[in-house]
Length: 207
Image (tube, rainbow, N blue to C red; front, top):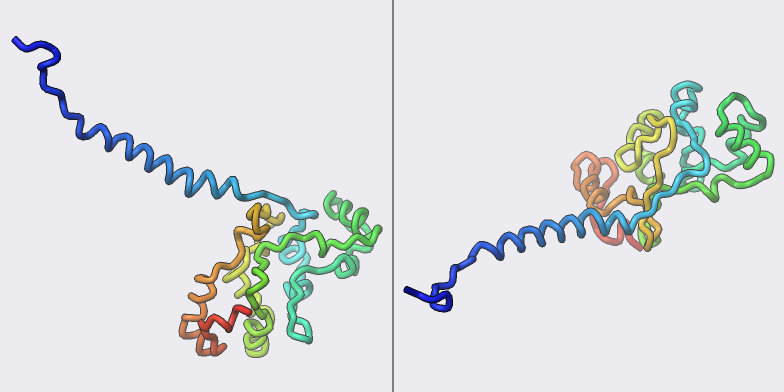
């Protein structure tokens, strides 16, 4: 008869794997979801602008507010004065329009300074809308060129209100900022490279 001290110890070879798997899953959830979301802040545009109302219902062209200037720079956000050409007074019953007229048009407050840019690029990135759009505008027209906007931008033309701006707390950049692999993929396509002579060399986009 053996005493308890003499009994052979049972091997628990699989016990460590359970703890390892639980720890791994917890680390993945923490690293891929919890921490990245803690680093993000959510903001909203100063006015709930409806592209559906302006483009689909009122028949406005995209180029009325978004266009390439004569010097090649791009006008992406209209100013208060631009909007006031139509909204010099309250036209409808939309409370957001009434607030825009009262708080911006009548006071001279500049909406352009407060509008959050979803895809503002870092300072070391050079992107020319003129270079990308002008060849298409010349050959196929502005309407055809506007269809390409969604390749890089959110499809706000189909939205009745602007989406929330989710940005990085440290850098301030939006989560929708164009990533380098997206640019490289488009440059690598034969049709894009053939039409624009695009290059993937670093100095093409970085300064």
